Image (tube, rainbow, N blue to C red):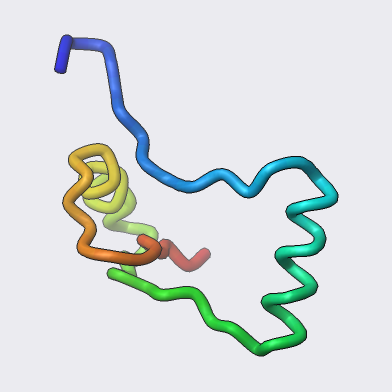
Length: 65
């Protein structure tokens, strides 16, 4: 990777209608997100580094505030 560039991996949910439909389905079926790791706010740099490196196994990287 060139200096000054970054790769961010994630998922897209589409337009607002799709987003709202997805949220209704999540709520209706009481789905919980898959959480890979939780970092305290004091370690947010590590959380961003993990995301930038694409080294999370599967699921969300969470920083509770």
